[in-house]
Length: 153
Image 1 (tube, one colour):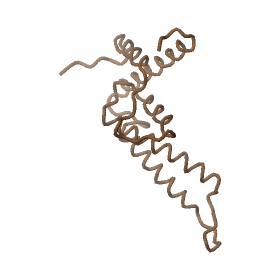
Image 2 (cartoon, helix red, strand yellow):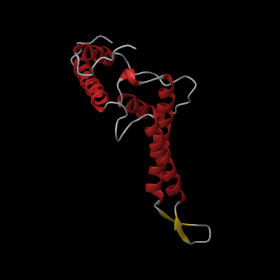
Image 3 (cartoon, helix red, strand yellow):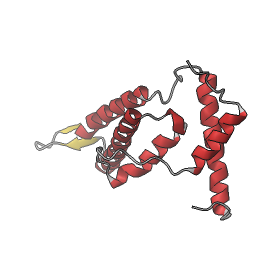
Image 4 (cartoon, helix red, strand yellow):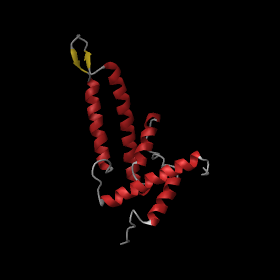
């Protein structure tokens, strides 16, 4: 059994810097992603350190991004239509999109639980949170370097 590297070690910090310099992973080729889902994909991928992602996690991450995009589309439609609408007989009823949104929210939460995102971190929280903190700091440094044209693409 190999010894794990501590999240707050110098070697972890160096690895996080190298990982942050790399472009984000692409969605798996066999998962269809809409253009609307790509920004959500980027957010989902940034939520964890690069070395936490397995191939299966990337598939679930793509499903989560798609779910989030559909949720946003349905929510926008609901805002236009309103939560109470008239049916064919002229009776005021709850907009069926409300139920769709509830189901999408449940699916989103289930996918997030599968990826161990949000809420309590599985494993040693200090280790996972440390990796994620270093990853975010490294990404911020990369963005600053790109803005100053100091990092070659």
